[in-house]
Amino acid sequence: VRVGLLGCGRVGQALVTLAGRRNAIAGWVHVECVCALVRDLHRRRGETDVRLTTSAAAVLDAGIDVVVDVMGGVEPARTIVTAALDAGLPVVTAGKTLVARHGPALRALARRCGVTFSYEAAVVAGVPFVGALTRRPHASDVNGISGIVNGTSHFVVTAMAAGATTARALTHAVGLGYAETDAEADLGGRDAAEKLTILRHLCGEPLATVDDVLCRSVRDLEPADFAGAHLLSGSIKPVAIAPFDAGSRTAWVGPAFLPSGHVLASLSGVDNAVQLRRGAGETVTFAGPGAGPEVTAATILDDVVEAATSRRAESEPWLTQQGRRVPRGTESAWFVRILKEPAVTACELATWLGELDVPYERLVSDRAGVYVRTTAAPWHAIERAESAMRDRGVAALAMPVLAR
Ligand SMILES: NC(=O)c1ccc[n+]([C@@H]2O[C@H](COP(=O)([O-])OP(=O)(O)OC[C@H]3O[C@@H](n4cnc5c(N)ncnc54)[C@H](OP(=O)(O)O)[C@@H]3O)[C@@H](O)[C@H]2O)c1
Image (cartoon, rainbow, N blue to C red; front, side, top):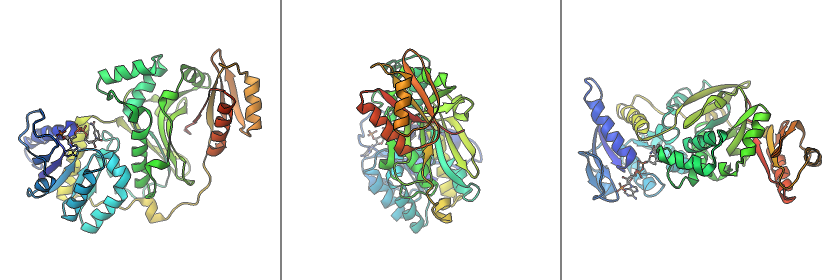
């Protein structure tokens, strides 16, 4: 299988190395990376026989069987991928920004052109579940997705739960190679919002956009949040949630409260997980290491072999086949934290929640804050309550409680 690479950075080079190793195994499909598009021909790279070029056309005209996009961003990746599909070449991509923003259109183009467009590596590359979902379009009655889909923020929140400051946790993550120095896309939620959007497309919400996702940064967390969550028998994790039962603004990325015993509560560090909620409330969980050049390259290589040997035709997302669901209105229980500085008493908080029509189940407090677990309340009501409290100068933060 002759592969043309768009990009030869960390993932591209890991793919070249992995393909070389696998090619030494007798009987394995021989995958040869013949040429790669790069920006800078003179940049130092690891040992590779791949011919480098700055011309996208030269890659597409190199007599290749499959295009692998590992260049990142939207443009020029989108233009080149479109040209490849138009030319009848299957495309495998790891580009989450590209797939989140243009996945449905590129998938439709691929279908029209009779080739595959594969993106297993674009979302939680280390946990290859996209193929499992697209091969089993009718097996699940999915009505919601949740998960931990950003390893950097998970590492940082795990360290904060153990007492580290955000800055110290981030420095540690950078030192271990789990984070870039500029980790804003990870901590602020944009990376997770892109992955959540790809998951929503996969589950039949082709019109979902990254801009629909309400993002809250894990930087908003205070040490008191972890103490309060503990008092209410739970923990805090950076989570992505999309219930398929209401209009826009119901997709959420940010810290959430997990009751103890929740499957995702047992994960830590850079682990990732995707959980599908289906039927009468049962869940299916896929979990494992999130990403990294080597695991991403392994996932890409599987997609390459599948695309070249046509072992898999991509199914339509299942909800599109079944028709859209009737909105039920999105509700969730909430964990609300209020810092006691400026002075706020538990009694005042209870009164406010009553005024704001937010019913609560448990209310506890310690020296730092007052913590409440509400019963199910609509997302918009809790947002209103949170901003009303902030208007009164109260340091309030509301997080959804993830149902078991
Ligand atoms: N790193 C991971 O663990 C991981 C995991 C999952 C998915 N991904 C995705 O995989 C993709 C690649 O990630 P990476 O970490 O390998 O990135 P990277 O190290 O920055 O490599 C990007 C490569 O693309 C080339 N490139 C970028 N823009 C270009 C342009 N306009 N024209 C020509 N060449 C261009 C660069 O050329 P030069 O070398 O000349 O600069 C470089 O070779 C991204 O979409 C990322 O989101 C990465």
